[in-house]
Every structure is written in C-alpha cells, then in structure tokens.
Picture (cartoon, rainbow, N blue to C red):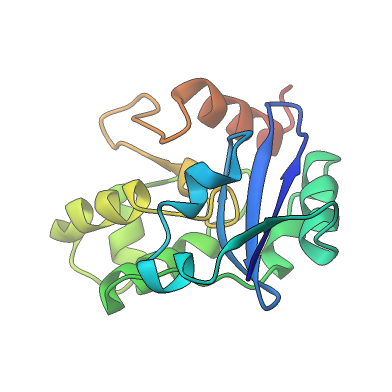
Length: 166
C-alpha cells in the first residue's frame, strides 16, 4: 500500500506518497491522486491510502518550511528512470539549498558531457519527488527561471525561501 499525506505549506498543499518508508512521489497539489497516477503501474497496483501523519517525512517537510533547509535531505527517495536519469536525480539532491545550477552544470556534475543539458532538463521535467529532488534549483543558462511543473511562482518562492529573502 502507498501511504499519502497532504501537508499544508506556505505555498500550498504538498502531497507526499510513501512506500515502505521510502518517498516515491511528492508534489504541490491538494490531491495525492495527481501524484499517484504518475507512478508506475506496478506501484499503482498496490493502492493508495491517505493517512494523517507520515512521521519522518512530515517532520522533514515542516522543518524545511520552518527554515531547516537541509531537512529534506534525510528522507530516502526512489523513483523510476534510466541509469542516466537516476544519476541526474541523485546529483540534483547534492545541489545545496540557497544555490542554483544550470542544466549544463547539472549534467557536468553528474559526469555527463555538457551537451547533455537536454537530458538534465528531461530529468527535471520527469521528477516525481519535488522538492525533495530539488529541480527548482536548476535555472536556464540564458537567464530567468525557466519552467517548473508546479508553476514558476512556486519555483520563485522556493528559491527565495532558500535564499532567505522572503
């Protein structure tokens, strides 16, 4: 069974989905089913149950929004993808709060050629575990914020929160 909790945050509800203590999906939505349908059919077959408290995950989310910007790093995560995508997602988790990288820099940090910026962009677009896998910390090298699955205002808020400029 996949357990889900909807956690209120300053920028709206965050749905988090956990399987056997490991976070498998998270996103800024009040409906955990929106995240559940993005899981693999194998995980969807386990079913979804909304619970009141997910323990470590809930505490980490609350601590992050209260100012402990490293709190999300302690939560184990797992999401599907190729070896390349998994390497990019792991590299994303190593980008520290309060800093940003370009897509090309992310690819380079993951040990991929700078020409792999498109793969980095695709990994961000397919990320199922925001903000735990912090794709909001990746900005286009041409300037601006680029896109964000949950909207650019959410990305801007997260970056301002991490920079301490709210």
